[in-house]
Picture 1: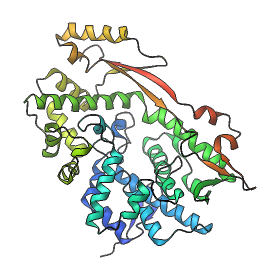
Picture 2: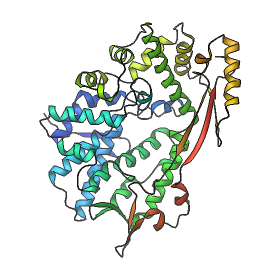
Picture 3: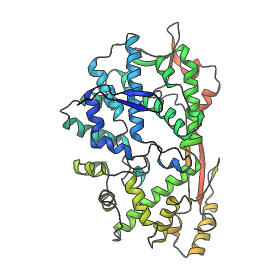
Length: 406
């Protein structure tokens, strides 16, 4: 069977699968599940084209990692065949732990279990299945491998993950501001003292990359409509779980039923739970909400209908903290109109905050290698005054409440 296949990707053109192990991992049911997990959660309610999946993204990341390995080897950086294979595996599987709609699961039907933690569990399980051939990849994924630049290629401020998702999300949303030149960025990479650096002539590409990241966060990832849709989804799952606990057995797939029935935290993730989680994807949630919109529970019925028919709550963004009087005003109006409890009303009226920091000065910084051999942080090396401002977090506050009638 020909395992060294070529895939056609709308971003990069033809992508080759580098070896038979990568092919076998892609073919595995755990990885195939990523075809059914949307890369950008509920963003398709804002950008109709944003239906691409985690599967697309992971394959794109492997392609960029192949480019990076080729460039670094050309510049004399030693990367063994075993290390090369491990880099491909680590970047291929870096997002394998994402639940339905990418981030909503982490805050609703599992108890603060991050997708990174679940990705690691999947990798460890696959390592047993593939006779220990993922051991080095897991070490790199966890950031424990002594060659730091390899860990930075998987998870850093200029990693292959970001290099793919900015370009890919920009393409599928049609938001041109995120369209970075990932090929140019990778061509400018080098390694000094086992740490990743960018050659001086790549400085403008790095500046564009950081600015694109900031614009994509405000314009796409933290777009207020996408934000309110995700908050509604979190609340739908929370309410469904509450009703389930009270004995109201909701119609749902077997995998979703398991998570509604059980309190699942990281310590509960044994191989059986992982197997159930692997059967959970966007379709389970959409299918459940199509039924739940007709449920006689005021909260679950209305929240589900809002998402299914894109009839969302009103959301306002402000620069200052939301006053409690604003919330109470909307809560009282809701209680009076629909004769519901204060607790139920708070499912429809709530506030929160979002933060955007395009570049972190102290965490795994992007370093520029000057021709003289001097290495300095991009913020110091750049004449773009904006970059210093972009390294400070900007916080905005939001309030959500119903439009005239539910």
